[in-house]
Amino acid sequence: MTTDHSNTDSPQNPQRPPGSELPLAELVVVDEGARYKVRKELTTIGRASDCDVILGDDERISRVHAEIRICPRGYFIQDRSHNGTFVNGNRVRRVVLRDGDELRLGQRCINFYVRSPENEVRKRDKKDRRVGTNRALLRALYEEVSNQSVQK
Image (cartoon, rainbow, N blue to C red; front, side, top):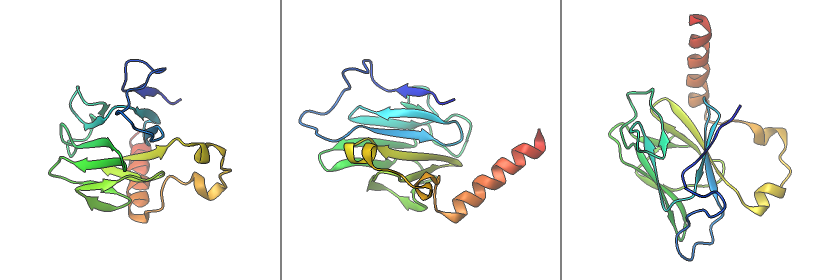
């Protein structure tokens, strides 16, 4: 079951920067299946209870680990941590996000999706259903899941 976490007060009237024509985006926390809509000009991700996306179980994640900002050119992620923010396996300080990007904060994997008419209509083949293509990240995720299964 997925949970829709909206970081705005009114789903019918999302907070958008003036003049913004960008399609809405969402973040999917892979291990939880939780979905967070990116509707505000600034969306914070971290362990702090006042973050828009709260990732509380990993001490490698900072209180405010990263920020996603809506700018005229698109959605930017900015690292605010000491441990780093990774996009598609590359450590970044600030980068434009693209549909399908895989974010890594600590051991948490988050997928970034842009909701646009072309993405909604496009038929996705089975290859597009992959969580990610970074083998090192997939191996780490597999080991983490395997360890959890053994402990239960």
